[in-house]
Each structure stands twice: as structure tokens, then as C-alpha cells.
Image 1 (cartoon, rainbow, N blue to C red):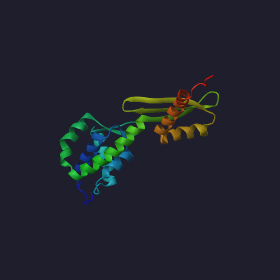
Image 2: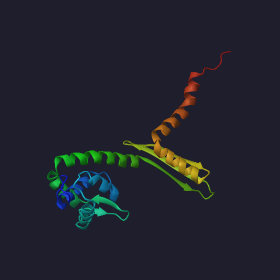
Image 3: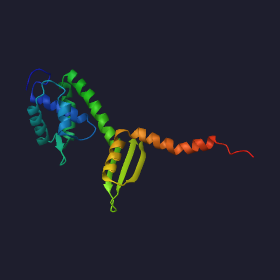
Image 4: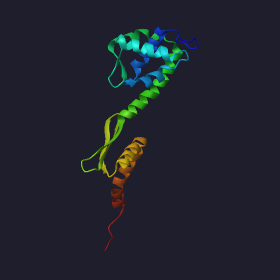
Length: 186
């Protein structure tokens, strides 16, 4: 390990990985774990991969078949015991990075869009928007071409709240206009 940062050995690096794994809201892939762990200048890629593998081998972390890392009960217990061994500045940097990643992960679980081919050759596009209270919108409709289905699905993921707001406005527009219009008097 390089000595430019606060993480001075592999044991401290394992503490850091456990600290991160204990605070991330869902299992994450290798790249995300690496990105979060690189919060200290002394962290080396090769040491990181070795420590991550050791933590899986010792059952502090699990590695799913789809390549996602998650902390185990054993890992949680040891993380709580060892977290005070990490430098305060490293924990602060970690917490800041974790806040950003957790917000992204939460957002990903609240906004979903997919499309699939129908037997007749058209496509069904499905979109859903949730918030902390539950489902806000579920929408399914037909697209005539695959490229259109993909484009609509991708567009929804970019600005779901804006699309939801426009749909609501369109649905309420006639009601507002109808309420404002008075029948002609004879």
C-alpha cells in the first residue's frame, strides 16, 4: 500500500470496505464498491481487489451470481466494532460519497421503464414512478417500432416527474376549461 493517505495497511482497507458495505442501501457491483473505496489516496486497486476477495472468502461479504456485493451479519458486527479505527476524515469522505450513491440507488428503484415485443409485432412500453410513500404512476402503452419503444422508455427515465406532471395537467385541463366555461344564456 502507498502511504500518501490514511489507510496504511490491508486490515484498515478491509475496515473501510466493511464500513461502506454496511451503509450502502442495496447490493452493489465491483465498480461501485471500487469507486466508493477510492476515497483515500492510499488505496491501491490490487490491494482493494485482494481485500474484497478475502472479505467474501471469510463470509463478511457475499457475492451474488450477478456480481453484486452485500454485507453479511458477520460483516455488520465486525464493521461496527472496527469503524472507529478509520480516520475521521476518511469516514466523512465516505459518508459524503455514500449519500450520493444511495440517492442514485433509491432513484433507480423508484423510476422504472421497460419494453417488450408483443406477438403481433408491436411493443408494450411500461413506466412506473414511485416515491417514499408508494406508487405514484403506472403506465403501459403500445409502440409500433422497437426503436420507438426504446426511445420512449429512455426518455421517461430522464425526466419522469416532468412527464407525470404533463399527464396530470392534460387530464385536468378539460376539467378546468369546462369549469370555467359557462353555457350560453338564452
